[in-house]
Image: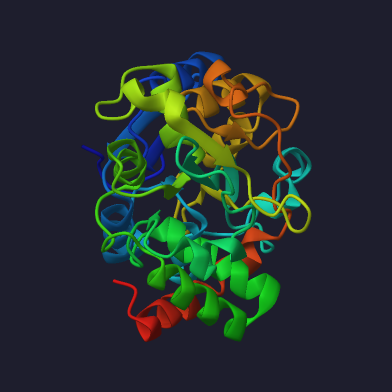
Length: 324
């Protein structure tokens, strides 16, 4: 357990919703290189954000690491982050993956793309807009509207095309669902494997996990899957972030900045991304063998800080069309 908020030389209090074994090497390398000891509190992202909010100025947190742009923006909006000045982060992290006010930075990415049963479907959707085409009625498995990945995807559509187009898209996809939304991204992929649907929307790392190892109900069916990185002729594939920021009341702010800068280093980027088969934000860093199998693609370069501002509108639109 972490103690009070008193500053302590050589410590870093980390609140993290990441739970990957390879992160242990990430932390131990930082400790060895800097002599700074990391004290960790791990938990659900929303629970950690609520904990920081409740702790207020007495929070011992120095850094919050969490998943998805929407949660990073929520933490910012609730006053849980502070702006920092770091030439390392501003130069290493692409503009699309950092907050315009320098309050949060992305360190790994996941593409939200289209998977399909290539034994059944010869003309899969090539764009996000295609998912709303009536010819795919009854074929799509996708998560609920409360899922942060879907919220950020719809928020990106709002950013690019406006609210009316986004509402029409949400209605069209809802009309094309093979079943009511249920489960996580792996469950959508299993829906294709079982024949319940022909199309699934999922983040890339869920499928890459199955390519890299054994995933029950999925790894034995990989040969039937094809995949599409959408919008390659226009905006590019939508990307979700895993990232973090320095806590508003960080008792060890200098150490917190050092840690975030470390996460942008080549060695940390390799660990950070490899731990979950994600894409590093630093383009020069290699991806895992499983991720390489997915192929090259164009990513959406939209500023995710702008996208995050449209998340509340996205949820409103989901509710309006009755997307559960």
